[in-house]
Length: 142
Length: 77
Image 1 (cartoon, rainbow over the protein chains, first blue to last red):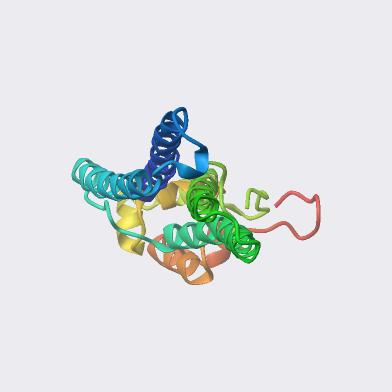
Image 2 (cartoon, helix red, strand yellow):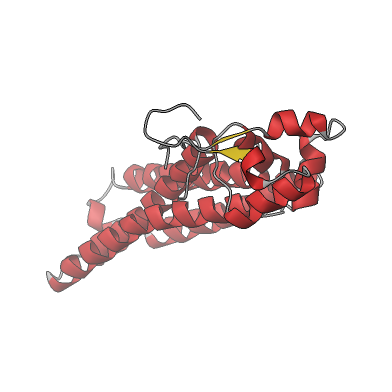
């Protein structure tokens, strides 16, 4: 497995894993108060920070354990990366439009923040899945 | 994305005809990772024209000795 494919796995799994932690914390607190009153900001920032921190650590680890060409990004890696990001961007657009509509409807900040966070998570997961499939099943850019 | 390519190649045979050149050695000489050479050999990735020419140069053959394309739909290469 190439370094870039491992990287795609890390990003996808971390996005899903840290979001699951965030949901567990928020829904755990929601047992004692209405959902929109749950103090979600700190868990959200902590899980985003955790995801970034773990991503850096895991990339350092796989780079240290990989072959000498680890970190080298060739033509195929760049094309698959762009393809995955392009696929993932679709969720960001959907999330931004949803947040815009929710803001105009003057919904609670809780929902607006969470729809944007969910869009980022889904974007990362979908982009990573697209990259892994491209590495595994083949990628014909032409 | 996963649409199979109709391009086939003879890289594996040509590597062996060039002093049993390994995938890693070929990868190093054309500036890509070994995984990319494997993907090209297995038809899971179509390289750019420039990379295709680089492969042909390293293997000391014309481009169409390395890569083949069937003349028409359904015809074997």
